[in-house]
Amino acid sequence: MQQFILRERVVSDDVLMLSDKGKVFKGGYIAIVEYNTFQNAWQDRKHTKKFRSQERLNSFLKKNYTEEEIENLILY
Image (cartoon, rainbow, N blue to C red; front, side, top):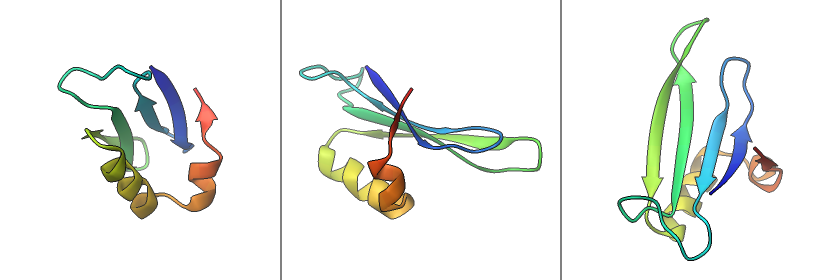
């Protein structure tokens, strides 16, 4: 599994987890995104989104992240 930071924030980071080539996560998922939304000044609310196809992952990333954030993924 490879982990990448999508967006760095003060309280928490958004993380993309990709399965290794030829393998999948339990349930048939190829990727998992853990992202956070603002809850209050001290904490964020954590959400998990799982993907079974590359097309759905790409559409989610394009909708929620800028081109610059996607191009500059940081290996975690």
